[in-house]
Length: 202
Image 1 (cartoon, rainbow, N blue to C red):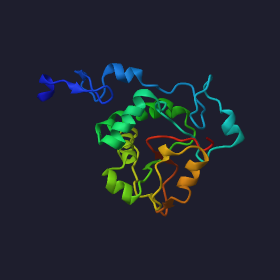
Image 2 (cartoon, rainbow, N blue to C red):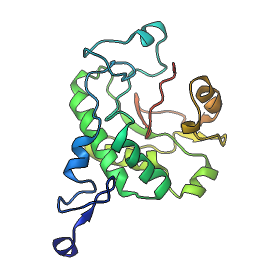
Image 3 (cartoon, rainbow, N blue to C red):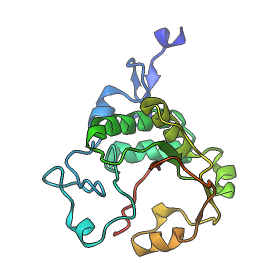
């Protein structure tokens, strides 16, 4: 009832709107949506359905990466609102956009995932933040893709520096040995979900 008489506030521009969503039409249209990209690491390319030179030289440890948008502009605002300002509604937007992208590319995914696994937080970081943003995104994907969600497959055993503060080799060193497999068996390939993708060759 209240929504009929008071407008929504956009998570990115804080403007009032009547759309009935967490972001206004203008801000969603301004998001840097992924287009043509490397089928391996999601790097933007001039052509679709090809592998970039970086991945040809050094293949990633995963089969395929899928990203909804580039980490620019309004996307950075959404991530910041979720992770650092406790705007959990941002996870609905980010999860929806990611699910849209995965569904759009589903037929081209050769190895179909059978379970969705969010990247875990270290217990100390989880206590500080109060939630795991990757788990919130994974919940949206689980509902949309009708795939089971397993948030106990891995655990983070090392409290690391925030990846956003690091670059390149320092990122890889930062998370080296930070995770441990807990599940004795996972049924089939997994869809690993995180809020931001850092390519391992950077």
